[in-house]
Length: 176
Figure 1 (cartoon, helix red, strand yellow):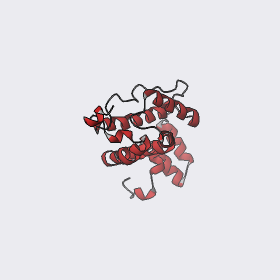
Figure 2 (figure 1 turned 180 degrees about the vertical axis):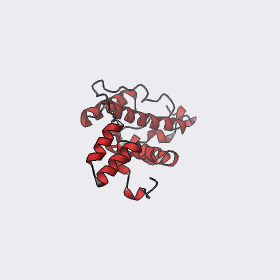
Figure 3 (figure 1 turned 180 degrees about the horizontal axis):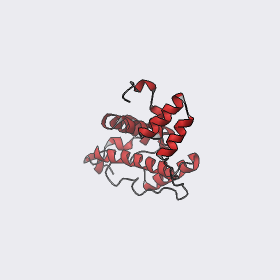
Figure 4 (figure 1 turned 120 degrees about the vertical axis):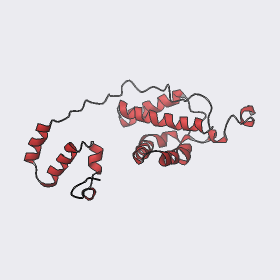
């Protein structure tokens, strides 16, 4: 029983609760190595959907069936769609991949074969407006509303980027 530990094949960190490992090891790694937007997205997924559900199980005891049950529970509790569940699964896979790379775990990634509930809705098709439709909108708008629509369309901003844009980011010639 103790041979793997004595031979250095297992790390004492593998006995950490997943929530502790993520908060003290994985998220700091992501913050230092990835883009700020990636870190923010991961932290949001962690806080909204995962943190509370991973406060009891240790890294080494987490299995594929646990991941599948976790994803099903998130779907039923929050009603999130397939895309969000894929993002959550990817985040969790990254946690276990990082643990393997750090020598904390040895063995298959338990997230890899985890299933996403078949009931989870696929994302809806999006509709892209044409330039003519935007010009009609711009004729009907004035002031800041007109500037916001023009900025979103002509700069090709996604909704999240539009929400993050501030007037102070524009100097009259450039948007920074």
